[in-house]
Length: 268
Ligand SMILES: C[S@@+](CC[C@H](N)C(=O)[O-])C[C@H]1O[C@@H](n2cnc3c(N)ncnc32)[C@H](O)[C@@H]1O
Image 1 (spheres, helix red, strand yellow):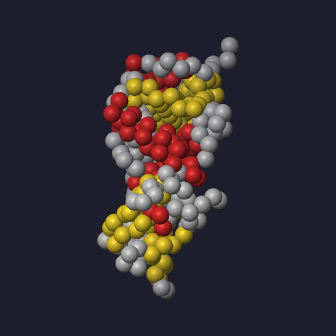
Image 2 (cartoon, protein in one colour; image 1 turned 45 degrees about the vertical axis):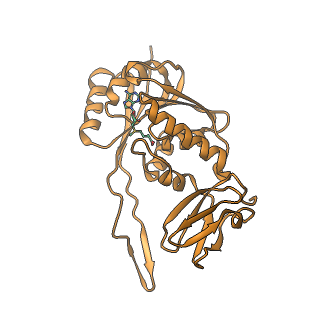
Image 3 (cartoon, protein in one colour; image 1 turned 30 degrees about the horizontal axis):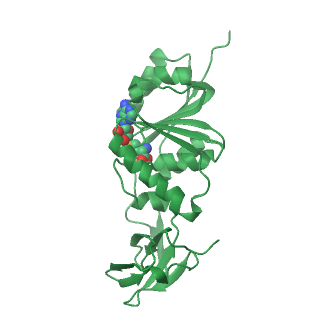
């Protein structure tokens, strides 16, 4: 792994796990309760180096992982948590070279994971009806893929300032992922745009939304979709202190349901 350079985006982590984000600029300094840290003292170090602030506190310097980056990036809308994104990539079977449509973009957390998973030969088209959210997402994405060296290769991204309830322009999509409040309103367009065998994945926080989506498929689109499963992801951290090892007191419990259906074609 190469040395940390000027212009890179890094995270600083103190002994209590508090994080600070930093865009490195020669000659600048960063101040916090730990005192001052000179950017020049970080530029040229290895990822994972531990430095000392002016108050002699040990500070870990890392290139953020995608999950770490999304937790500290600027947010317009609520993002999908990394625990759910991890499962979504697998349940939607996002593969290198895939052509994926996503709505809405929000802050771009899922978009970034999709861009990485489809790789340089893939494509992600992302709709959002809020241009201000897309501008935030675009900045987040540019910073991650442009200024974090571990970001890796990314697929082609097309952001569309568009209401997906009015239709989907793209055709022959491998995957469609919806993170918005009324996914059932998109089913008729998904039917036309998703390849047979393709996967529709919807992410929604409430049971009522998932129930309405399932009923709409059953009553109106049953011939063209097969529901593959409805999931919820629980991830519980553990802590170790001396001779005690136990689950953490706090846990991010229910966040959203992941609904997965497969597009099918009645054989003639
Ligand atoms: C919860 S956020 C998505 C968060 C995103 N998945 C992330 O991880 O950062 C929902 C987004 O859907 C957008 N949205 C809602 N209805 C929409 C529609 N009909 N067409 C396009 N975007 C829509 C909202 O503007 C909002 O940005």
